[in-house]
Length: 386
Image: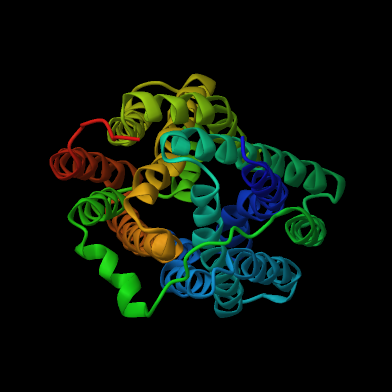
């Protein structure tokens, strides 16, 4: 495994401890603490995910332009770190929205350059394995973050500010590890923004983008999934921050095996199978199951969904792009997916407000079924060549 992949995995592990500490408490902080309605929460949740959309293009293109992937990624990590203590000062919805936009902008700036570095540091036939290892390390942080938030909340008598302080300290550590151990990979430099956007003229890559956007537009966000679980099972509020741990644990166990399976059996097949797992998670939520059986089954399927799609999509798309547009091209793909998920959060929040959570989830399940069929037609299921 390339040293850069391992170093970037370590950065992501540390950073995800920080970010998932906040993500684990954010739904309750906004809904219970600030009293947001599902529709208002859907807007902020969509903003939290969708704010990365346009800045991904900026980050990816800037990294390609001078082949400075490490510098651009580091800027994004630093911006997100600075947003953690700012949440303590944000007492209104507009203020919280502004901080979340800045935090997600940092994520948007860093994601494409980071994934481009992983792709450029790995041979074409081992892309799934490289992204699987990275995502496994990343998910270790996602597993530890909610546990840390749970521990800090317990020690601080359910006060949120200490969570934000600890999260900031951990994020600073991640930036230091990036500066000390990650190396830029010298390669071709990119051209204009027009040249970056021209990657969509590549028919195979354009089909991958269209499939990812179609599926992203019918994906219920993590926060809504956890709120549904808490609502349907009457889970005590104090255990809510632990729900992401179940997703992360399954993701951690399956990231590398499914990355290897994607290299061998076909990345398209594994990516589509991941969305079948998400549909199964919706079905479990709508089933007569209850209690911890429902929670365990749903979170396991949710983790399998991420293990089969997150890194696998980057491994599928990366080799389709020239080195000089690798960061920008992946940013184009990630931007489309982020914007689609932003729209999905808005739509699901509105459906929950108007129809109730169960009817909204039925609608999401039916739309995901249709979108899965459409994505399968766009992507096909043939195996990629190394």
